[in-house]
Each structure stands twice: as C-alpha cells, then as structure tokens.
Image: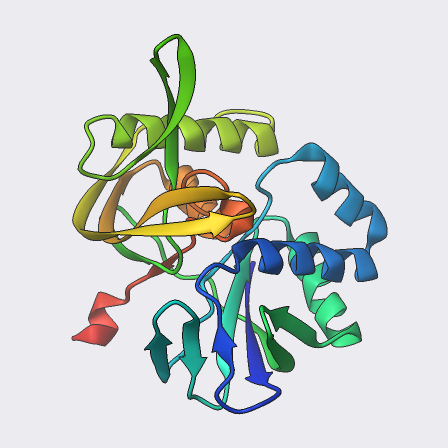
Length: 245
C-alpha cells in the first residue's frame, strides 16, 4: 500500500535542509506510535526495513547552497509505502491525530492524504527512483572491515542488490520467492550522497527497466530496493509509458 501526503509549509519561502532522512524516519515512527504503540515498538526493536518513503517532492524550488532547498510551491508531497497495510494505516491515523511534520527549521501541516492505486508491473517495466537506491557491501582493507557503497557502474552492484532483496523478502515473508532471479537494465543514474545521523550513504537516483522475479518487483515497489529503505532510500515509481506517449 502506498499513500501520498500533501503538506503545506507554515510560512512562505521555508528552507528544507538537504539531509533530512533521519528526521522523517523518526517522525513516521512517532506517527505510528500515536496510532498503534505496539507496532511502533516492534519496528524500533527489529531493525528491519518494513517501509520506505520518498524524498520530499517540491515542484517549485530554489537551491540555496550550504543551506538547502527553498520551497516556492504552495504544497509539497511525501510518499510512504509498505507491503504491510497496518503500517500505512497507522501512519495515516498518526497524521490525522497530529498533522505536523518538521524538517529542519521548516514546519509543514498535512493538507491531504490519499491512497494511491497499485500500478501494473510486468517484465520490462520502466521504473524511476523517488529516493536513491543504496547498495552496500563489506570489504577487508588493512585487516579492517570497511563498508562500501556501490553504484550501478560497479561490477558487484547487481549481484549484491539481488542478495539484499532476497534476504529482506525472506525475513518479511518467511520464505524465498519462487523466482529468485532478476536484473536491472540501468538507463541512467546520478550519484547522491545523504547524511543520516553521523553517517553518509552514497546511493543512486536512476531510471531502469526491471526483468525477472515478479514477487521481488512487487516487494521492491512496496518496501524499496536496496539497503536502509526505512530511512528513505530505494523508493521507486512505475513510469507509465503509454500515458507518456
């Protein structure tokens, strides 16, 4: 299930910081706690990516170097998605009870919230990211383990992404999908670096065609592709090519 949350800034020309993923994550958990405390506690203790969310979508904006993004439009959008409908319902109820979202020094109020229709996903579906896909791997250097973020241009990217998705699928569903094979035909990508807490994550904003396991495709659409999706990474949308034509 996926929802779109329309948010209106409390003041004009507010500036949203470049790095806000941690703030959004924590406030979404607060919304869940307001509606279903036990569910929020489960999400906090299990450390699994049961949901994902998009970057804040600002139609009219101005980049202010070293500060952030100035909001020039009347409202912005935040998309939240999960294969567990109870999570999305709890977030919606939490926003209805407390319709405020704070990002840096900017305060937003919920103007509307709606459920989005599920797209048709088939072999060769064209996807575009709504937040960067992060694919991490561990490497040994000087007898130390170091975490590396991979880009689609790296040789291990596809194989590591497949392992990540299969692990997350089996953790949430208690089994592997019938078809475990898939690959991305990456049409274009742009590196993106985002700070969460004290750590930087390097991901990729991209457009790609997806081929292979339908179960993983649906799972990735609902819960995100790659690592750290509950911190606002790996959300994708389906590009309707017929509509575009």
